[in-house]
Length: 521
Ligand code: GDP
Image (cartoon, rainbow, N blue to C red; front, side):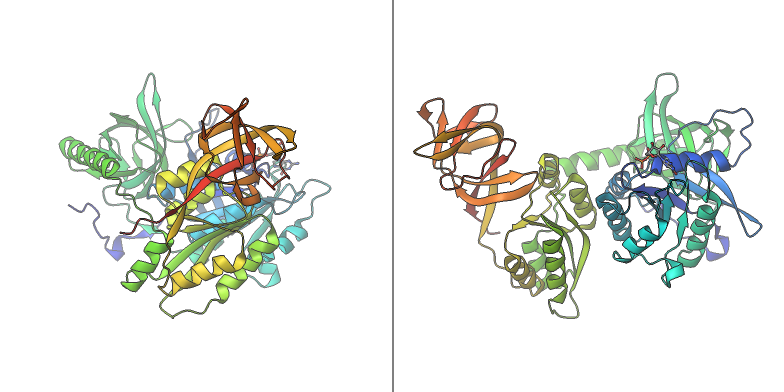
């Protein structure tokens, strides 16, 4: 059964843009969201107390015309990509906040790339211009390198100088959002139909039961509607806006708090209105069963570089998405440049959706999950959380320490020629807590095994802050107290001798792995 009815173009009317604010930590995302809300809340909240419901709408005045904008009140690209992972694209425009006294930082670029991967237009808010050391021109300059060229420099990105502290420039920022929406997007919806939307926040309230903030995307949601939200269902008992005022109906792009669901949906769950309560319950139950089956069958298989080659041969894919992380900027740039130079068939395309310096993070893995990308780690490794997430989601992370090896693999994959035979299997990690000198074995690392196990015949590498400091090492001695042992499991301490590798320090991580023949399927 398909519930999505195609709208008659004659029924479509303009709807407000939905905006997410992103940027580096401490650059002022939260304060900017507060400032916008306080200067511009739509409804007259005379004496009213604004509530955090996960999103709010403000009214701007563009060339004499009053127009609404919806802001998602959870800043950051992590929440944004997590929602996309659940199949929900709620954001129309990303506001990239950069502090004028600090400049472009790693998470600025991460946010930029996450917005780009979602093909969401970007407006740059150059914040903290009230500070004496602010240098807004420098921000424009810096972002040029990343392909965001300000309009005043002949580009097509709107940059607005703001101060979340004094309120300066907020009006201009709202104008820029509307102008960008008008130039790049065709935001329309049909208010005269049953509603569809997304849960952007939900929780269980002691007195009121399940409370969900719903962003209506199409149609109009009304009190009394029977709804399904993911695997939750119910009837809309009451709705409230961001001022805590009760609402009867919510049209496109309007966020409302909804009461009446029998259980708590998850952020990113789709909401739809059904004919009646029974249908709502049936759909919810079916979804729940489907979810259970999916969990059991682990149907969520991501593409690996080998799968890509195979699918390419069968004509089933044409784009290879890559995320590149490396230990130094120069290596990442060199790798990216060389990869983009690979000449392939017109039918195949390579897209580098994100690149950065440092360990592979959970946010990299979540972007890879959403956009089915393969992650390249050049002399870097995933941190613990990222490794777990990659394992759970089946994200293919490939490690290299020689640029040409990486280029060879990608080139072969893009030509449908990749024939891998061996793979690396991660077996354990240990944290170095002390260093001992041994005349026989050189430096011995007094280490605590944190995950898996360290075995005498596995390979090892040394990581310092996620960066590889020694690779393809052999464990030449492994001891518990005075005894030579073959294996030390997680939760125990041991002495590890890495032979000729002597550059070991307290705080390093020793990662162990085995090289195994790849199972053929
Ligand atoms: P977030 O981590 O990006 O959400 O950053 P916050 O909104 O928490 O802001 C970080 C710090 O910068 C806080 O101490 C804010 O008060 C301060 N801040 C934010 N915007 C401005 C601004 O426009 N001017 C000045 N002077 N300080 C600001």
